[in-house]
Length: 345
Image (cartoon, rainbow, N blue to C red; front, side, top):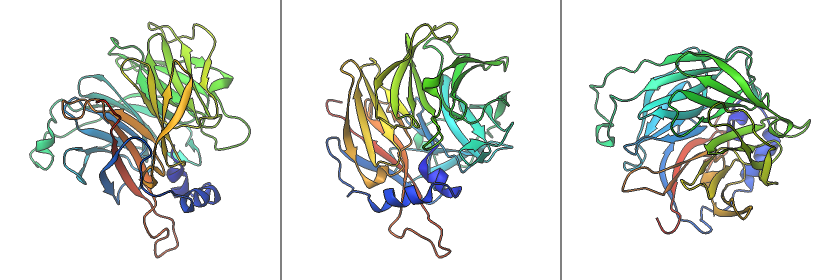
């Protein structure tokens, strides 16, 4: 959950104001940054995924709508489908081509309303091509609830269990410090990993295990509360822990992230710190590669998938506009999508 989301819920205002007034200039450090879109609604994005044809899917913790942005048509956004019985959307993952799964919850404070956590399927196989973004004759999308995970405190990051597994998700519970395994065909779910390293400490922003991503034989994770980036050896068949948790980089309070296809690097969205961090996993080193006010609430990262943008990074975020408060004295933000271009792509 982003700091801007917390702000909209009336939480952590002093912390946010300190961060907002300290925003640096919109200049990248190492990697170029290009703004794909700035949107007054939703005010902030939570997670991002890339479709096979290049379009970007975005969730927001303050909206029940799954959004789509075409990176090749700046400042264009489309609400694809509304998820019923919820006020916010969090993690998103693809198991089959253009079949995505989204975590939903009714947010209250830094946790979800009891019993409101769920996982939904959204089938986009009939919705293709950026060139069709403005067409009105589209087949209606009907989201299908896969599972009600009533025991979760706040479902957040989501990924597939294994590369060749099209039926099983792993979902992080940021409030409970757990990893759930979900069978998307039967709707069954269970806790497969629960460890202190995934949970909250008594102090700080109470969002623990956040982003998760599998690259066999590991499940990689961020813990926003503890400020760690690490990995867990797991079974690709069951998701069960097979060894001790390895903290690769301490003092890295990141949100969601993406791994390079070879598993050698990770790019971590540093929510509230205006930066994108690159982690060299074998060397256990992290460095800031982009610093920008556009990344004031950088929440998640995805990779380009077309010949035009393969290897490029897309970051979901939010930023404070020129006027920090609206006419009612309420702090406002705007949803941001940017592209970051690492070298040699």
